[in-house]
View (cartoon, rainbow, N blue to C red):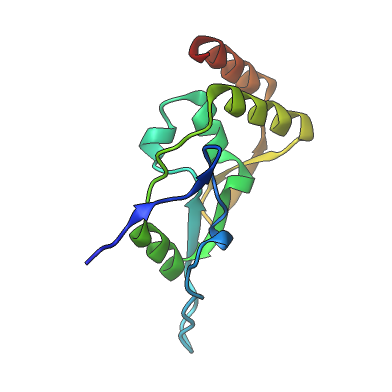
Length: 133
């Protein structure tokens, strides 16, 4: 029986998985560990509705390479977060990330592609923020 609960957030920002009571990865002697990428902000469909939320989801600091068994456990125990930051907090986050040169991460856990927030992406976020506030 699946006993899931909402993924915890702080002011709408998901907490880091290391703050959750997740099990240690299972190591099988002679078998290579498998990893994949966990996005703190899921689901892809929900977060992809807006440029601001998609940018937050794509931030490298909002992703974690996890062993597949622990990643499966996380998604089995927790439903996606319902809370999201306010448009103001999202725009503030994107602006700070842009100013600090923080990276976006795309691709797989084993072959990530890193990019900066371009002035064009920041502008798209600002335009959307103007419509959402």
